[in-house]
Length: 337
Image (cartoon, rainbow, N blue to C red):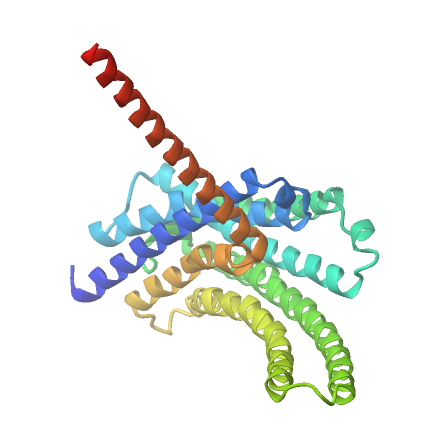
């Protein structure tokens, strides 16, 4: 293995570890907290976490093995199943992010009627669509033998393993697949989150007007307090922009290079560096490591749940230590007697 292969292998291993630990932590928070389970977005986050975990334990290790062994990481039938999972999980994860953006749009734009417009039953119907959509494309690809080991990405994924006669159908399928997964999800993300950003900025302007009017009336207010209020105004305006930029930016940064590479690959005249193919696949994998932080772990409710879990574990550990110490003292007394 050359230096580039070692670096990429280390990157895949690092992404795999971070994705596994962070997604397991989100799952623990979901199971531990009744409040999170009651919320409708929790269903979308649970589905996204399920896809990320399954991708982490099924596809990432085989990509790592493929990089190290420089070849097929298992039997053809096994790789066929993993390629099916790769297509299904990637599609389902993208659509889950789009579903989360729709949920946030309804919550911000229609706050008074949110609970009637987005119930658990409605969320289940949306998730049902994401599963049907994902299963449709992955099943067609599997039935037509369009999944297998792809050397460019060192993984079991979508590829044209059949004769050249089916190339036209494969090209049409690939373009349609990425248009109705990546492009559709990106359009939904942009439209919904930009509407959310517009409403958030409108609310910020109203709060700023009220704040400025209050500062004008409070003539005896200390200059440091006035400055602190103005700084808080600026942070409030930037907070919504940063969140929206993170949601859309991570999606584009992680998935766009891989999707563009898959489309460029359809033109044999355009050469693709094999190292770039694996790197683009790693970027797609890195979304599984980013999602827990972008959508869950950095939110107050999840941080509070993590803190409660840690405090409970520490308290139980302290009680166990005290019990062991008490048992030790009792044993010493019994021995002395």
